[in-house]
Length: 248
Image 1 (cartoon, rainbow, N blue to C red):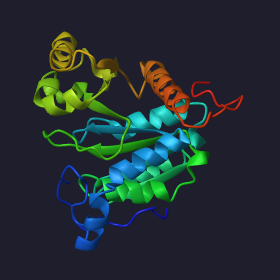
Image 2 (cartoon, helix red, strand yellow; image 1 turned 30 degrees about the vertical axis):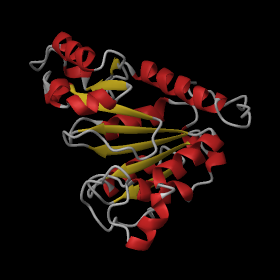
Image 3 (cartoon, rainbow, N blue to C red; image 1 turned 180 degrees about the vertical axis):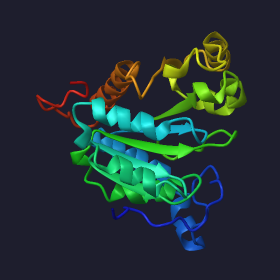
């Protein structure tokens, strides 16, 4: 697979404007037109939804995306960007299931490098872009996404919502993965959900299993509703094709 994007020049966490690692001339250009604004404007014109999925290593983000692509009816209209130094393997794993995969070789994405990757896509061919990446305990930076989704797992423990407070605050949805092992490990789902709702009462919590498929339909329905809302808000009406319902 040939990735859309080369390695970022600076792998440290990005500042709010997403220009860390760029030369001074480019920083001056982007100061008045930051990449996250350019990306958001391009996606708005095209009616393309961009969702950023963030969680700690081992939370099951790649499995969740693969299960999403396998069960949605239009995987060819979904692009995926994987972000971390070891994600080339994940990109290869997902490539056969979706329309396009890009790999950013960095611990966290810069808005500028995500914009560079997306700008190489013909957005008319896509309905949705999923950005997969790990996160520390800090609040995720704005890279132009429409929504941030926290991905935490049963295997990680029922205290992880409280531990990732800034991520939960920033998320519209919290996905609890690996629900097929509930009952096999010590995990109090009530505690987990209460922590989420205490931190962010507006966040939806969806439990899923990539193994059994449990909860995937609910997650797909959320994505479909978000995609339709983005289409409806586009400057020019985007007529859905007869066969492109996100859920078959």
